Length: 170
Image (tube, rainbow, N blue to C red):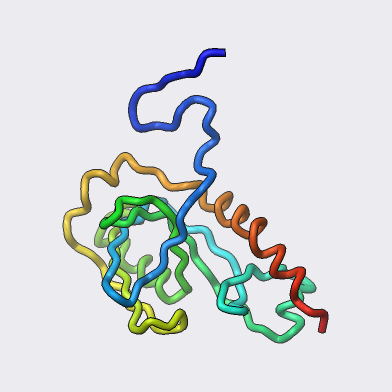
C-alpha cells in the first residue's frame, strides 16, 4: 500500500493525533510565555504526594483514606513562545480562575497569552502569573494541541497506576 501524502498543516491521513506531548512547568530562572490553544481546560481532583500530582481515585481512594487532601487541577494546551513547542500546562484553581477573568481582554480563551515564573527554585515555590497583552505571534494560529482528556488519562495510565500500587494500605 502506498503512503498517503497530504498538504498543509493538518495531520497526515491515518494519524490519530498526538501520541507524545510535553508538560511545561514554570521556571525560576526566567519568565516563560505561553499562548493557550484550547477553548476550555480539562480539570480533575488530585493529591500532591511524593513530589507529584496524583489523580484522586474517587470513592475509596487510598490517598483520601490516608487523610491526604485533594485539590482542583486544570490542564491547558499551550504553545511556548521561545521554543514554539506545543504541550500541556497544569495549573491550580487560583491561576485557572485568574485566566478565566482575563478571557474578556482576549475575547476567548484560545489565543490568550500568559507569562509564568517561579519565585524560587523549589517545586513548592510560588508561581507568579501575568497577562501578556502583546500581539500574539502569528505562528500559533494554525496550531492545535493534543486532546486534553486523552493526554491526561494517558499520562495517568503510564505513571499514576504504578504510584498507586506503591501506596501502603492504611
